[in-house]
Every structure is written in C-alpha cells, then in structure tokens.
Length: 332
Ligand code: SF4
View 1: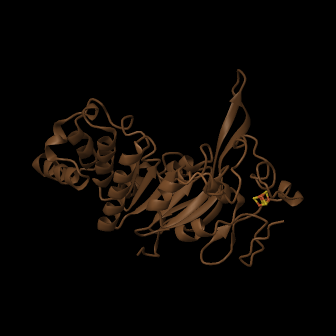
View 2 (view 1 turned 30 degrees about the horizontal axis):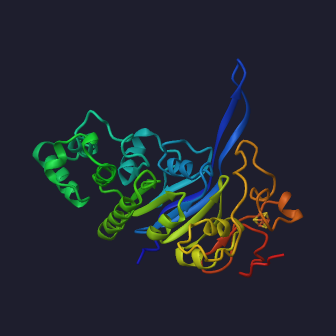
View 3 (view 1 turned 90 degrees about the vertical axis):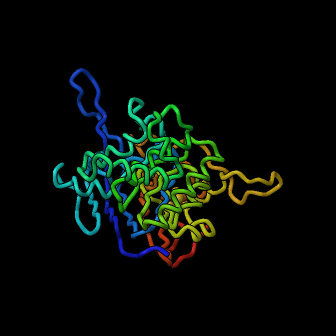
C-alpha cells in the first residue's frame, strides 16, 4: 500500500532546447522536448512513464533531478520548491534523489573497483570513511545480491545484470527517498530483466522509497508501477492507476501502445491496429493535438485545438477530445 503524501510534485514542466544554425550560431528554432508536464509521486509509490523514444521522458527524469535546468515550471520535493536552488542549497536534496541509468557499463568508472564505486557517494557527502565505510559497502553489496568479496573486482569482471546491481547499490548508499530509473533494464537480457525488476520491488518494500520508472516497454512498466503516465511528444496524454490504464485505456495512443505489446498466441485477435509512422519532429510539433497525424479517430478540431488532461474519474486523466468529461469515450 502506497502513502498518498506527495513526495515529488512536478507542475507545468517545460524544457526547450535552442536549435542554432549558421556561422553566428543564431537561434533558429527550439526543440520542444518537454511541453507542460504535471504529475506527482507519493511516498513509497512507483510512477511508470512510457512512450516512444524522443517523447521527452528522459528529459523529464533529468529535469526532476536538476541535471538539466527546466525552461519553466516547478519541482517540489517533500513540499520544498527545488526548481531554482543553487548548487550549495541543492546539495542536501541531491542525497534524497538518485538515478539509475540504462547502460550500467557506461555509468561505471572502469578504473575503480566496484567497492570504491559504491562507497564514493559516502566519501563525497562525508558520511563514512575507513572501516565504517567498508562495512556499509559490504552491507549494500549483500542487499543487492552481490558478495562482499566482489568489492575488489572491476566493472568488466561483472555480468550486465551484476553491473546494474552495482549501480543500484550506489543509488542506495545515501538512503534516498526518490530513485529515478531511466530505462534501467533495457540493455539487459530478458531473463535478467525480471531479476533486476524484482530486486527493485523488494528494495522498495523494505525501504519505502519512491521510483520514477522510465521505460519504452509497457510490459516492464506494468510489472513494477503503481500508476502509469503515457507521454507523447513532450506531453502526458494519459495517466492512471496501472490496473485501470491496462484494463481501460482511453487515449488512442495508449490503446495503440498496448496493442503493440507482443501476444504469445499467434491466433489471438488484436482489438486496435498497430500505430503507423514515426513520432513527428519535436522541433516542429503538429498543431492542435500532437497525435493527430497518427490518430485513426482524428477530427477537424484535433488539428487546431490542443486537448488538455481531463479527469475521467478515479484519478484517471486523459488528453483527448473523444472523452466527454463524464468518463465516456465517444468513438466516431
Ligand atoms: Fe485523436 Fe483527436 Fe483524441 Fe488527438 S484529440 S487523440 S487526434 S481523437
């Protein structure tokens, strides 16, 4: 059972990157990477965020951690606005927020032993040294399913799954309240993916921290999340409790994403055709509803008006004109 107290509150988050051209590097446009995203994550809750590559989900993750500066909007952690905090004032909050990246090999220093990598945050934040640090690192190794005697090994001596366990141990070292997982299992074999996901779930049950879990794979998100947000071209188009979203997807994009999840039975019939075409360029996103160029239900108003996220009941929100605000979807 998750705690409804919001740990993280993101409101109208926008991140645009300038597009420069010519000798003078003049700004000639902007990439609408994130275009007005709002959501919250409760204590001990996992919010899964899905969408095709380039939809802005990783930029949301990095903005939340202040690894990139938002163009506008606000980020509150434990009720405190951290959007504009300077380096020194942000430092204690950095301890509360950790990230696990997609490629464990690229995010581990090949010249450091696994023990030094996991213990480094403790040194940087002045939390432990000497024998106390060694004991803490050994404990973290054990918590993620590694042996203490592996602390002296280097990253190349571990398998892909073990390397991701080192990254998880490093993220745990400072006792975070929020861990952002940016496609943490995408680079792993399917059999290893399940082990890492189960480890993340077990750790959350034990320590009650929250996850923002980014993935392009709905099956992965389904396993770990309490709620799921679906992103398309820099905006959330649908957000709901996991069971609700999977049982009753309201946005045509969510329906298409769910229909594209592989079905084991070749004779099974798909209810919705697979989505056609690529995501349009975020430099010049379509007018109105950004999904209208690929939507099988597109209407005239979709090309000029932008649908806002609207409540359709039970904390289920959808940004589509097909929802009439009473919880009904009207398919033309
Ligand atoms: Fe499709 Fe229109 Fe709904 Fe957008 S608003 S998803 S174009 S029906």
